[in-house]
Length: 216
Image 1 (spheres, rainbow, N blue to C red):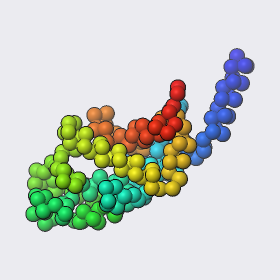
Image 2 (cartoon, rainbow, N blue to C red; image 1 turned 45 degrees about the horizontal axis):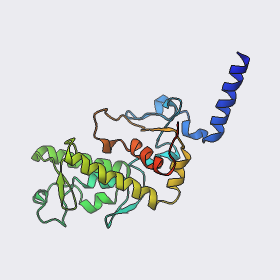
Image 3 (cartoon, rainbow, N blue to C red; image 1 turned 60 degrees about the vertical axis):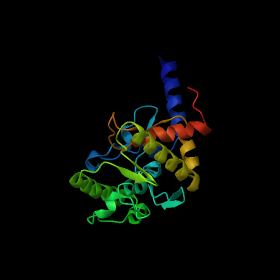
Image 4 (cartoon, rainbow, N blue to C red; image 1 turned 180 degrees about the vertical axis):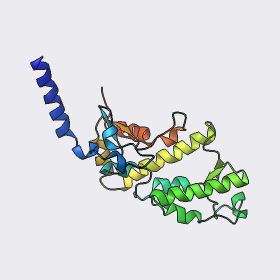
């Protein structure tokens, strides 16, 4: 029994030295947002991509500017929510006839964090009012929640955006590889039936595996 306990302590000590302890920092429950999963909530072998630690850079909200297909975005969230706004470069965009948009598409592309999220929420209300479903990217109009061709196209866009984010922000690939074989988890609830593009944590693990496969 003493040998087993000693081995466990050695294993835990090695784990603690392998990764920054701040990734699992204890945050008082009363300080948590209603949507938040705290760093200490990770199970063994997991780490939360918490906005309270450096791993928050992997959040779609993270201020990690990148270019994709010739256009600039301040964050992945800015890209995601901008898809809901009319595209002035496409004269056939039916949303251009609506005058209630609180922002331009370009303004949302330049947003990050909750500013981008709130812009998307406002657009969602307009979508409800006018019974819209399709967003747009370039010449493509699609329903990214159709669990078919639209969701597949959206997944491709977001995956390429995450790769661009890693490639174009110095040190971000290094930080991702620093997580080694830890299971990456979100700091908010994600529905089990949400389209794959919502699961950025899984996509980052797939991208990480391209450079450093986990052989477990």
